Image 1: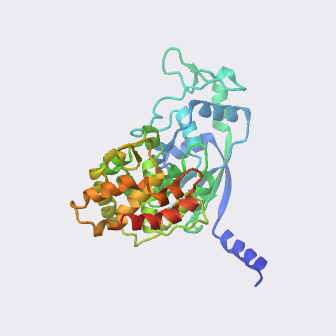
Image 2: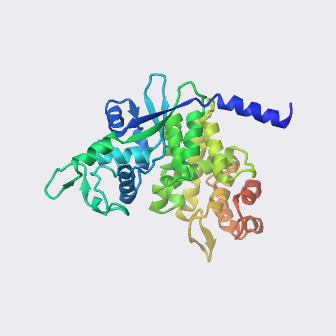
Image 3: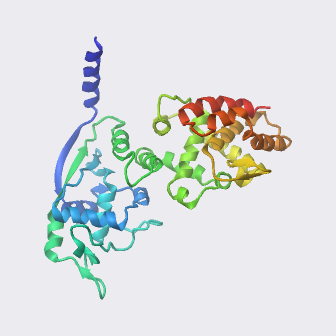
Length: 369
């Protein structure tokens, strides 16, 4: 078989796994399906509902003006229920505007949507779906009926599609999207495919020793950066890295591998994670992953230091005589930033593809006794 023939065969085989249908549906029908539980939005997804009021108002403007809106992707379960795969921002905006979005703990979308004036419809400013108090400006009834009758296109992934179809579709649609960081996309994939895995990663990301030692900003915490750091540590400590891929793609592959691994040893890896960050926090604390200079740790959190220290300590943990070796480990962490090899691969101009293949074997040797 020629290479061209193999390509055709690969396309034919893979296309058979992606069985989809298109279905136009009015927004009014969508709301009724949602109210009756026939279309599901996982409550955890709503924690990533972060469109600004301006973005929400522009969606309403687009509907009123007939500007095309991208398709909504849903997965049809065997019982016929639809699970939302892509379209969280659009559907949640409509439900919030029409006061149909339920309250979810810690989700800042409980208030009614009060529209802003937009580029083409400045008179939308201050309008709401329904008058509830003095001063409310209700959208004209004719326009409410227009919105209810406006149609959205739904792309339905049928239940007999391949096992990884939801994963692939969601990831491809959302990676690099405007509403979620790469880790938030991974989180949503985990929730969709195997929520216990998401819960496990979330638990590790809330470990007090871990959080204290990484010492990052509230903004990064909101963007799920601790979850990415947990994944970074697990991946680089327990999986091989290939510099043929971007780091984000590598992390995506590791998540997919974990999700599909029935033998993944959650308990043992959690034990190793907890003891590693307990030790690092005990002997260094908040400065563990910052640069050491002038007799103290200072500056910003460094991913390169996190990779080197957390992987190096974890890989050598069983060889340490604790607490006798605490001072030795602390000195190694402090001296890391003066090491020629570490600086060669983490300095300006370095990138993950050159850094990681060199730093991981280096740090395993560096932190050995």
